Length: 158
Image (cartoon, rainbow, N blue to C red; front, top):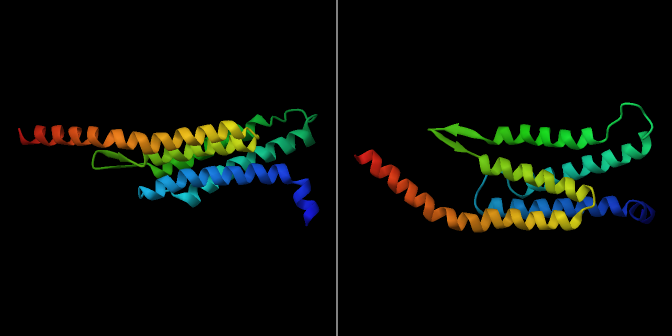
């Protein structure tokens, strides 16, 4: 068992970092009562990392096979997450809901891909920026939304 961890320590580290960073983003989403929380974001991040690691492994194994393009796997992660994100977005009563959650899942997949490639500094910096956007921008958005809602209600009264 020890040999397993020694042989796969880099893969394990990449997956653990992807899961941890996804969980951080998901924890913020959970705190603000959004649909996709810690488990979803951790799984999206880890899944993206897993596909990147798989892509790297296949590159080593099939490097001389004509027509093999390992970048196709990474590009299809983006497509797959787009499909998942589209399922999160709802349009109801002339309002769009879930767009921020969908974009959060999309960027979380990017962070997972980054961790999967072993670019840990970039993954950590990106996670910090996502949390900044979710937390700090929310603080700035609240008063702006209130003004917007007040103006909308004022227009309806006229």
